[in-house]
Length: 217
Length: 238
Image (cartoon, rainbow over all chains, first blue to last red; front, top):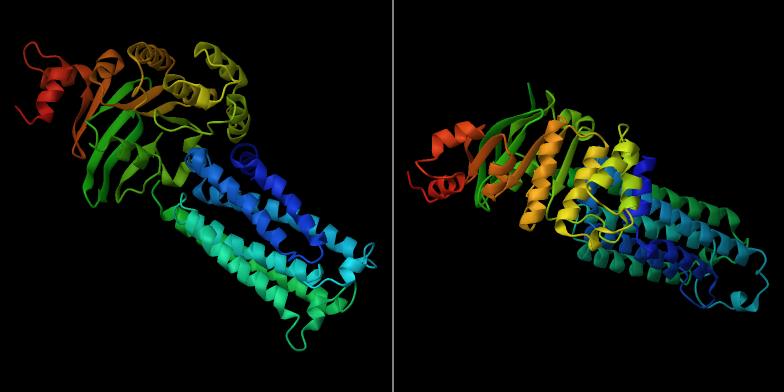
């Protein structure tokens, strides 16, 4: 499996997939919807899928001594690898806001969602949706990526809008915890996001196995 | 013994049917798969490699059913098409560096040998290569992992006569090393030049699959060459 991930990184990945991991630092931006960072990371991954199609990567891969399932696994491994790199950057940014920068006035007066563990959980959820809507959508044909990506954009911005507005709902202020406030709840929300990510990615991969096996190339 | 055996391969599309295609290939032989555009050559080849799913039929390599031993068989075969570019902007050496990890049988000495034989520059990208050179890159990849069977879809299509002749020379050289070659073409002179066997497909059906000599005996009339005979048969004349 390391060989297939190596192939993804060295042959089919687009440089923007790696550079856009840097958008994770958007979690440091005050007065900005921080979850847009997760969207830009997905946009970077999307560039690699464009490359996949232009470079005939799927056809090349299918001729290698691996199964069609392995090709799907390889793509998911690559996507999850980039997503986890993005999460790491976001986590570091969040930790900085929660600790070293906790006294900063720009963060204390932040009108939008704070970068906290709930935000990280939501980033996991956005990545899970990307895997389910876009990556799985791509494997229905192994060449059409426009419609799945537009569907993901709609879902993504609905999720961001929901995350940004939820803490204004009655009794939900603790979602927008600052620093280490409501830590128990925040940790639960983060783990809920992780669980949803795992579940959505698992469903996406299983369904992609089925869809990709059926198609004629 | 046949190292490739195709039996009753059937695939139905709304406007075309591959109808019970059967043939076999032996080690150290070159089989030319001939038919006009749209006769079913590429569909047959894609079915042989599980790129399309046949509705029916048996595909065996080295006596093993393809679908049950796909990875194992793919290690022993090579495929090339004259029409597809892999990773057009990556250097050949980068493509090779990734590809070789998938094959236990990869031999760097063979790789260097074919690099020299085919006069390829590994610093170049496929985008910088001519069509003929691209086919050679695919052949080099296949031969460096010691492929025993080469399946080539229209490898000479789009090549100038000199490059075609050079490629035919390479095929004969490889055949003498024991490699079996199955190549599709609609250029009959390529078949005359190097094929031992001819598999003729028309409208999705195999018309005949036999040795070139038998084929000539059966189908050419007085003074006709193979090209004349094929043209006559395609026109539906006796």
